[in-house]
Image (cartoon, rainbow, N blue to C red; front, top):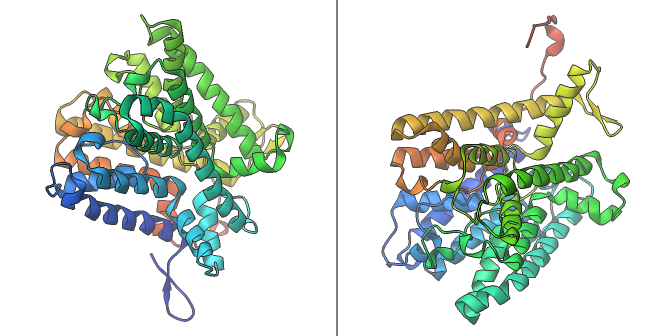
Length: 446
């Protein structure tokens, strides 16, 4: 809905700017990918395949219906990489940064939109944060490319190796999961490097740095190693990251890496504890995973990364806040609290709304595709969790799905990237909630 100002002109809300910005990028990307110059066989790609690829790249998901390395020309791959970069950093972030470079004055509405896009805490320093995000992103991605270059130059030659290093560095940092390893075997992802410490550790670091969130970076920049000075959000994100890496890694090490040498077991288990949140690379075929391994991977995908990051999912803070609230309720505390700070009721309600929205989106789409395609529910749950959490991991089903199911995946990739709160704020104008007009009454739960 558009807001009408006193001067009778329609203006877009911050949420609507974010929502429409992604739509415009997806449509432009679709048009460019449909050009014969983008296709490896120099024919126009069908609309649905181009739309699916553009949506997956813009929403930094990584699900594909055509192998990226063998189906697209260099032009097509560059288009995909640009969409990944803009989608990872955010349309609003890139627009604001380019406006600053051109000397254009950034108005209050644009600053508010930027604040919402990166989940910044305050408005006063938002322009400085924008510059920090762009510069930090470029430094990290170039550093990642330099580290990956020796391996890829060895395997693919100098110029192709440089391109591969840059492509995979950006894809990893933006948590996109697109790869160019299909030249070896279609849809093979990083399986050829499962025992290479340089490639695996570099990708893990890039994924983690992208998934921490730009506000967490800013906190670390301002306070260095003084953990106590960090905001509560940054503390919860960093502590949760440790838990969500260590415990899945231990499980994968003992249950999903049988027969591998010790070094490869460590690298594979580490990578598959990190990549599902929400990078989408894999170093082993998920078809070999046990049911428990698939279930844990689905949970990791749905949790995702930090708010205001390149990662998707429900976000770490959403899940942590709900867990803290549950513990506080069981302890019969008046307010949920952690690390000496109270969590506001509005924050708890927002976390519950995001959790419910994503869970309903995930379950309804999984059941729908399972019914339409006559596939096992666990298999469709994996694909739909990957789409709604913008991960990109797959059991190999996505390219084989019907047009209807692919459209469903396109929709949930978009909704998953935009986020529940942005969708609601874009559709509903803010009004007085009017809670004072109604009497209160308790309802039994549980």
